[in-house]
Image (tube, rainbow, N blue to C red; front, top):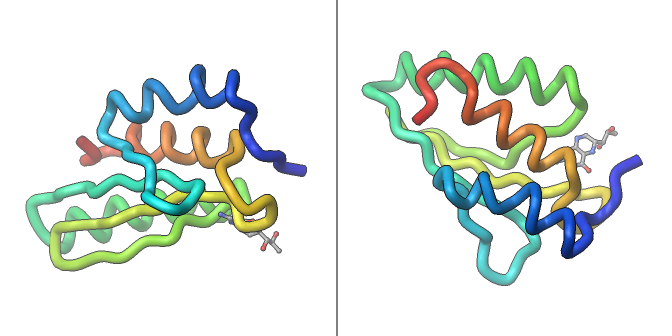
Length: 100
Ligand SMILES: C[C@H](O)[C@H](O)[C@H]1CNC2=NC(N)=NC(=O)C2=N1
């Protein structure tokens, strides 16, 4: 069962993500990042890898894709805000081939 991140956990878990291009979404307890790829094939290839991890961990992004751009928002719907699963998925997404 997920729970909302405590203030202390936010300092530890969100700081490295913010340093790596994630930003807080205004008026929501969520983080977002835009990934840029050379084109659609690379973007969709990254999304395919990301989708496999999301399904494996039963934690799914809100995302959209336009050609080589993928906009990702992470939050935990069941708790109404950020949980450790969002940080874990964000780290995984950043580690996938082609992500910058
Ligand atoms: C039934 C299923 O386990 C839930 O709906 C899962 C699926 N994926 C999810 N993803 C996210 N981001 N938040 C959730 O609360 C969530 N819940």
